[in-house]
Structure formats: structure tokens, C-alpha cells
Length: 331
Ligand code: ATP
Ligand code: SF4
Image (tube, rainbow, N blue to C red; front, side, top):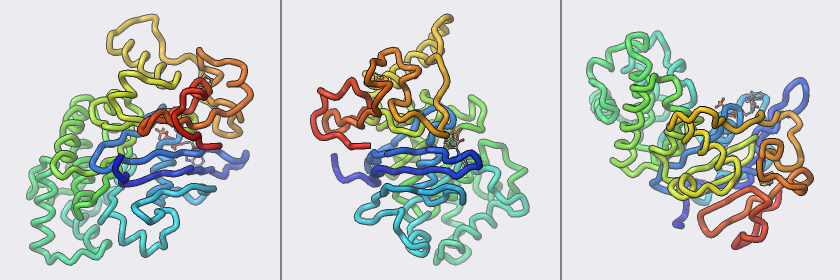
């Protein structure tokens, strides 16, 4: 594989809460290939947003990155100074957080949001130049530019607000777009239109997209690569076609079986039985073992390594001990 746009290495994040530590992201390692869409999938509270917030340095104050690196070329995003980070964000890497629609200021028009964004990131356009760029980016997300620029957020639908946020993120033509649940707050039809739009935008400039979604069907539509997160750990990573057609980790297999059951409307076949683990004091052995149909003795005693199966496939499961092609990452 060519050098990735981003390389997340052994990322470990905890939250301090009254009862102790929430182990929200543990030993997360996967590359984000350049010019491709990588989807980070997993059920609610599995740690997806924590990974994204750590790499974009937007974690809340009670979070602590205990270890890990996020390499952008030779630079580690986690070690950059605030000013280095400011000059890189939006210009090289733009991030639209989850539920960002609410972050639009109700007292500002969309045009004023463009002005604020341009000012905050030291853009050199004059008023006419910025207006041209605003219209260009709004056209990319298929919104009627002049009308939308004059609108306040409350005058736009949820789908339009989401598009405005993506348009703002495209203002500096960043190399990497990070989108946390861009379809979550939308109805089914608007979701489908958003998926098509994201496909088109990505293809136009070959953006590197890192997309967080709990909806594996959306990942299936959009992603070239998939990182499957379970209980704060990466359990499988690889090319989307390979992962969807031939999932290796028992959790991914269960997830896809339940999706097929829903699609085929097969009653009697359930989503994976059992509950996801509490991330306050999670087990020191395999976090999926209480729900895993293939669990054996060792699974309840030892945490599995993240095994590499060839160059572009990783699976965290004891079953792959003997099959791995190269070295494993110790936990
Ligand atoms: P969702 O799809 O629901 O947003 P997620 O997969 O993105 O979920 P995270 O939001 O990263 O998951 O949460 C991972 C774990 O960290 C969860 O147990 C969550 O309750 C916990 N968590 C998240 N933010 C905080 C916080 N500020 N303080 C304490 N715990 C937190
Ligand atoms: Fe299942 Fe064991 Fe693999 Fe965990 S390590 S996923 S319990 S087989």
C-alpha cells in the first residue's frame, strides 16, 4: 500500500468520570489510505467518536490520550503545537463533528458563517473572492448558492444544514475530510441523497475521507476500507469488499448476518445476542468473548493481539494466531 494519508498507531484514550476511568479507545491502529473512503463502524458507544476527536484534538476536558500517535506524513497530529494545528486544520484536514448542525450560529447567515470561517483560518480572499469560493462549495453540495448564503440556519432543513457544513469544510480544499455521522440526523430519503452526494464529492477531487457511522449499510455504500470497532477496540480492518464479503472477526460476521436478516426481513434471526461491554473496567480478556459463538477457554483468559493477515487486513482474535503473516502488535 502507498503511504497512507493518516496512520493511527496504538491510540489509547480514557475519560475520567466519578466512578473511575472509561477505557473508550484502546490500542487502536489502522492506516487511512490516501484518496479513499475509510468508514469507522461499530455500535453506539463503541468508541468511534473518541478516536476521531482524539485525532482532531477536539476531546472534552475529562479525556486523556494515554498513548499513541496519528501520523500525517512525518508529523504526529497529537504532538503538534496549537499554532501548527490551527494552520493544518481546515486547510489540510477538515472535520465535521457529530450533530454539527446545532453548531451553526442561529444569529448568523450562512454568508456570515463563511466570513467567520475564512477569518478564523487566515484566508486571503477579498469579499468577492470569498463569495466566489462560497458559491463554488455550495454548488458542490448542490445547494442554491445565493439563496442559501442569505439564509439563517432556522430557514434551512436538516439536510440543507448538513450540506452547508460540508460546503464550509470544503472551503480550503482540504486533503482530508473527517465526517462524524453525516447522515445520522437525516430521514431515510435525505440520507440516500447525502450518500450519493458524498460519493460525488469524493470522486471530484479524490479526497481522503474518514467517515464515522453506526450504519453498516451506509459504510457498505461508500467505503473503500472499513475499520470495525467493538468495545473501544479495533477488531477488524481491511478493504471494504473483502471485509463485507468475507468477514473474519466473529463480531463483524454477526453484524453482517444481522444486517442481511433485516434486509431480507427474516424474522427469528436476531442481532448479536447480549450487550456490549461496559467501558468502565472492561474485561482484560477478549471484550467480545461474552457474546462470541466461537469463544474458547483462552478467550476468557487473555486479550487477543491485533493480527495482520497479509498487507491490508487486521483482525483482533485468538483464532488467527497461527495464520498471521507477519508480527502481531502487543497490547
Ligand atoms: P455514538 O455512535 O453513540 O456517538 P461512539 O461509538 O462514537 O458512540 P463514543 O462517543 O466515542 O462512542 O464513546 C465511547 C465511550 O466513551 C462510551 O462508553 C461513552 O459513554 C464514553 N464517553 C464518551 N464521551 C465521554 C465523556 N465526555 N465522559 C465520559 N465518558 C464518555
Ligand atoms: Fe471470539 Fe475468542 Fe476471537 Fe474473541 S478471541 S472474537 S472470543 S474467538
